[in-house]
Image 1 (cartoon, rainbow, N blue to C red):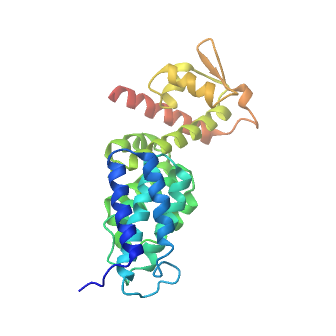
Image 2: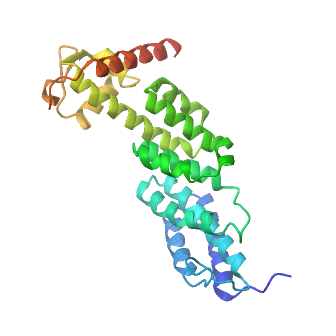
Image 3: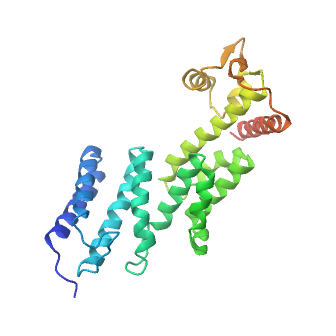
Length: 270
């Protein structure tokens, strides 16, 4: 028979139920407020890390705390807050790593671990991506969410950007779309940096295809908002103002040509 709940645990359970209801009704401000209140309540639980006191309600407290931080991670995606995602993830990670002998595995664990890998990839933090990957047990690599992130990283390192853009249609969960969109921006910026160094100018349509824009207008908006040193004249994009060093060698040219080829192939498919 489970031990009776103490007042703090009962209050936290009630607030968590309200939080999920507020989220279902799309009341994001209420969600943020309730989430903050819940995090304060969790500090009153003696079973919380780093002490992990084995109190009669320890299992219930740890299970609830893990669920709250899982919610916080997903909520940070919903409000598009990368910094909050990172903070909440590292608080949650303690529950995944240090409560294995106390709690059964969470059904959300690999989805959230995969989301963190996607975040690192989207931020071009490849070394940290591999560090996090090495911490996972071998069985995790067979999970669809982890496998998806690993395959994307391989495509990213190989420069096969068409596989990355096509990957948006094969996400293992809808929450992955947020980081897929950020990854597309990272890829675009990588290609743009190489373009500015490898070319003096490109026809507008070639630049549009290479940077994976669906229209010329979107390309022009990108140049206006992001690439302030580029110029558009006579239906060409001029890169001369972006030159900060001598033109790079054949490797950059090959990457640009390959990107253009992929863009043309994608256009034919569409």
